[in-house]
Length: 277
Image (tube, rainbow, N blue to C red; front, side, top):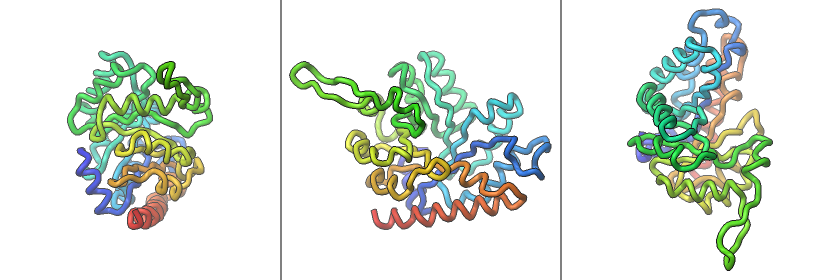
């Protein structure tokens, strides 16, 4: 999916919601547990009930990989079921030497037809370049995350520049600035956690036009209002992910209806922020 289509979907639906399909088979409603295709049946019901109120779905591949072959099959069924109008993200956090990354890119962009994949930038440009070679596919690079461990590396202060113009910056700022030059606003996004919303204004100073994938709203306590205030750009420029708050809104047979109700709440709030922007 290209940027123009994504922006059009946001404008038409008045939402920038991304529903996270972090489906844990141990948390499925009791009436689905034990069924041979339970994970896909759960995902199918969630997609059917939320597709009118979101523009994207994010599949956290770890939940599927943990189930072995049946997990991969459920993931592929799910990707195929998601409407082509929706932006499909593989939250896989890959990144390795070039020839390995080429295989990851082939797996997720060709074999499974995702629109985007999350990657870790620690190994540098040659580990990310293979993903950027695909037309109308997106590489979503970890920038500033919501987890406690972000302080270990991402928020380290480093010295940058030369002897005459030496300045201090966070490591994540160096990552954003450097990686943004490897691609462009049409094939690069960045992960910025919702619980780091106060940093979004600073992030927009570094990458004003790129889309941001923002997890951490909902169970992790991030504020949608703050994310929208500090993170929006002229094209909206946000995909705000909610996973557990939507897919596990109910433990009963009404799980899809309750997921729909929460998705509508997000869409309604997002519509107000889009109207004001």
